[in-house]
Length: 634
Image (cartoon, rainbow, N blue to C red; front, top):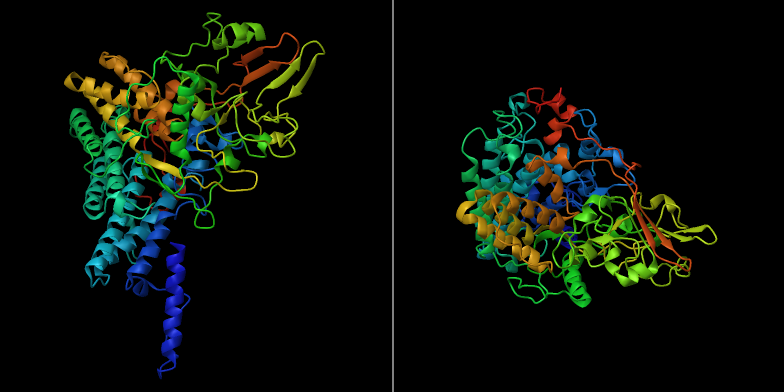
């Protein structure tokens, strides 16, 4: 994108200089260092450059997707933002139209009313003018259609984020002018907003090429179909089907029925799975389009292979596999930069240690054989402590809570003792092997304790240490030294697994003849993760299976924020955050003590029911007082 802009500027300058000597009116020229709307929309390459700006508009330099220093997952029961926890006003019960913090600033630009409408202005300006842009050859016509399709995709994606955040919003299919009557602008209903987005998706699908014929990182037919599938799936949730505020047209459907919407979501997801919008498939160990049954029993080598396969989905650079539908590229020296290793990595590597997994979700990851992990298996009723000697652990390694877990656990979580890369030079002497030290080393014979490098009492940037005992591994890159360099790996915003999960959910919720199809789809996700099939179940059990699987598969990616609102279970899962404290004994007896201190809070949390829908910010309401605020907010 930058190369295109620079090339165009240079070309115009050369043309100007070459022609000025032959013209008598050389002073009657447009400046060459700026462009007005007329000049931009007379050149498809300039329009393409403007479109590039629409891709990375949000966030004042931050990545436009969910790839942020403070992850959206920290506004759920999955993670803790150690540096700014009180700014997650949705999670701590302080959200009002006057005080939204992360939900009104550049941390989450993709759902920020002000940022999104700023980008919609640019997108609509492109759509207002694109049909009149000159295109004399078939190639230029195709380029113009491609640009239009991408702009429609971006508008649909922008509005889908607004709709899932606020409900019905202000819809416009053109750029506002200064002489427009802004006092006549009103919110559309939820159903009108949904219909608008779906229409944009259909229009984008008709214009966009398949992924094989599109520049990497730009919208494709499949990406537009994905947004449509995501919206249709969201439309099936309890939140918009009478579970929140019965009869309020701004935040739910007031006509139609949920089963019809479930069938629409099912059919759209299945069409994507059938290849209607391009070839996509789960990233598998064996490369087959449909994952086969994993080995049973799983050897350690098998677990490692499946863990690496899953981890590598998020460590791709510029040659995406068929699971990635659309994402944000980060090419060194070009465009927006991001630093996931620095943001999320352990402080003992001179990283910032942010977005740390919570103990309850760590316990949800299954064992490698597909059975549930049971914390109190060796001491029924004791949900806080495990303590064993080295001899006891050698006799039964499953006494270690991090032993024998499912592959996604090892691809997603940094725990005390987890292997990672070589330490920086000032820590290599303390940890020459490269193991996470988020716990403490205790010699009981001398009554001495050595703080782990990755604790808040460690020797390196202790203020960046985890507050609750874990770090996130997912999204990092072992080849990047976060202390000094940005990450090259893609942020995967849309991936095929979500479509499979949406299909599974729709089938399970429809029940009857569809129920087994849903379980079969769920087993595709499980098998790819190295886990055995779920067997046929009743609808309620299948629903529990599905919701569990979705959290494990999509952990940390931001999906959980939408799901606990869609299902209206936030009040059941948002709870105070407690630390996991690990003591590794270095005396002759050896062993470990894992202590979940549920009497100490590192983040006090509270969920308030009416915040299932976020408020429209007061400053926006003041600009347009005729807008209707969401229920529960003054």
